[in-house]
Amino acid sequence: MKIYLNGQLVDKENAKVSVFDHGLLYGDGVFEGIRAYNGRVFRLDDHLQRLQKSAEAILLALPMPRKSIEAAVLDTLRANNLKDAYIRLLLTRGTGDLGLDMRKCKAGATLIIIADRIELYPEAYYEKGLDLIVSTIRQRRPDQLSPGVKSLNYLANVMARAEATRAGAQEAVLLSTDGYVTECSGDNIFFIHDGAIATPPVHIGLLEGVTRKVVMELCRDKLGTPAKERLFTPFELYRADEVFLTGSAAEIIPAVRLDGRTIGSGAAGPLTKRLIGLFREYAASPGSGTPI
Ligand SMILES: *Cc1c(COP(=O)(O)O)cnc(C)c1O
Image (spheres, rainbow, N blue to C red):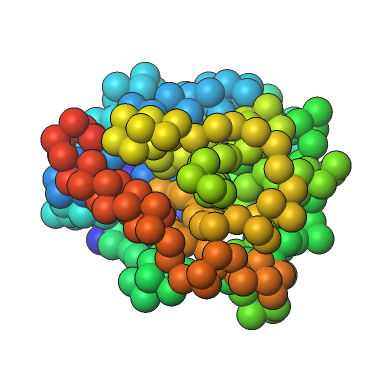
């Protein structure tokens, strides 16, 4: 496996960064998780735009223009002979000293691109659905570091996921400090009630997923039922007909239980299944991504 590291494609064994990299010392950096389908990198422009916005928000300069990062992603996929893949792109503050001062990271950002085959959840979960819990960990308030930054500092999400695992569930729902649903530890969330589709609004504080955006496009253009962005509590999820999560790795995946309550029929619902079909169809179509 070849890994892209600061301008070079190196063997996995040699893909090493300094222990003084602030990405390691402080989680100081940003990342993207991207998919390639059928020889095309899914919505690569959206991902690179979000990467740039995340980097700008933490005062991190891109080490090269966006077009060159795009070329590096495509080179990495070609070097590994991948047409369908999961791509992890990391941009860290780079090598500094043990202090917090970012000015000490003189060499600039470290850019890493890893392309591999992965499947996040076994196929059975797309039929039978996931178990969710409401996490005791609250989403960061938007007046702290914005949850819209796809930050390497992921410990709250990791702990929320661990909480789900320890409860025998697969994912954790993060509430805002005043109790509204924001998203899950690594995925956005939607629910359907009486044919209406809803998802939390971005301003509440959540990571604005590319998959979320694509699903909203599919709801509007293919289902003729635009998804409404509005506030809701776990109670509305308990009584929903269908709940599903979205993310680059998970794609669209149904959720059928929340804190021990069965949602809807307790299995993947008809609209969720339709959206999964529409999403897969779209992902396989030429307009959905950048050719490798
Ligand atoms: C990346 C991520 C998502 C999903 O975003 P996609 O662009 O669809 O992959 C949702 N929530 C969090 C916290 C994330 O980090």
